[in-house]
Amino acid sequence: DEITLLYEAALTGNFINEIQTKGYTTLTYTSNITGQEQKLSCFGGIHLNQTAMKALFYSPSMYGKIAEDQQVVFSDSLGEIHGDTIFVDYEMLRGKIQPVKMQVTGNVKVENQSLINSGNKKNISQYALADEALFFFRSQEMTLLSWENNQVLYFDKLNNVEMSASKIL
Image (tube, rainbow, N blue to C red):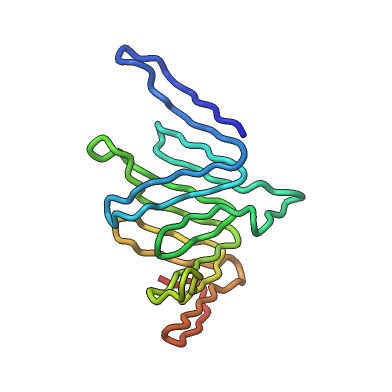
């Protein structure tokens, strides 16, 4: 719906310090590590701070609640991560923006797709529910965390595994 660019004038040209959007926003990126297209979509907006090298993707809330279909979504060919808010730390490497870490918070749902697909229909083989997820782009590792007295719930249909714990690496 709306985009705001905040910039700083310099001798070499204008330098964009911040990008802010309101409304549905999609950011698409091709990973240098996996070569896959990765996409972040949100309904609230984003705040990207080029100086701090951090980005915030958020969902709109009504009366303190976020509708499930309005959550922020990170997706690639392997699956999706849904949450109320996503923070991304990134760096500049050889003149290109590279994501380093992603923190997904609030009503986190992780869906991994099976390598065995049945037609065009998604076949979710692994599924997790958590309060928070940390994803490290270089190592492709994820940590799932629970808050207070909650538990992380994990289901793996391929290996017939179900578990709950306060933290799953």
